[in-house]
Image (tube, rainbow, N blue to C red; front, side, top):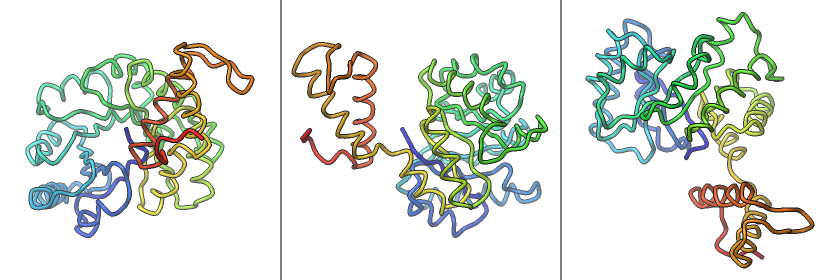
Length: 276
């Protein structure tokens, strides 16, 4: 369960040193797009050395390279006791099957869905046991489609909706694509649209984007209050169907209330046990 995923380049010491003060729920150390071909060894060794000497208080993933010749070198430098998993770019069924043959058992996979072909594979990808999340990569996808991405979100509505459906059907997290510029108004619109569609979290390319994302993807005070009232009534009546404030409440709404409170408590937002 996370709200925000922040990419940081694996060859920038100050960003590695500060990763646990950026407020992101998950840090993705990038060894792929952010790193030039001639600098990949530097990024691997620097990241590995730092993580072996320090234990940042944040969940960490590594975005590895897509080509087997590169990701085999990547895997050799991942300190397994400090990293939860890998973000795998250009995911499709064939490439993920190859990766799984060499991926250490302790690492899970966030599948980066960023090619048109991946959407024809997405059900199979979501069903894979070691996939923990589906992650939309809209910039590469729009490049391949020849589409123009703007704050309306029209160009990626189908991709977003399809990814969310697959993720929810198989119990995986759905992580939205980053917003590529630092304009806070556009980020607000883009993140709010993603949340309303059903995404669990959103990724960021700059630490300044993280507080806004965390705020938007956190339960609000009124939502928490309503969830507590629904659960209190459910437990008092001992039934999965009842009326509250003139509205019918049934099993899906009760389950949603429990999930919302679980998330609120994880981030210290529940305000105690009172339902007043």
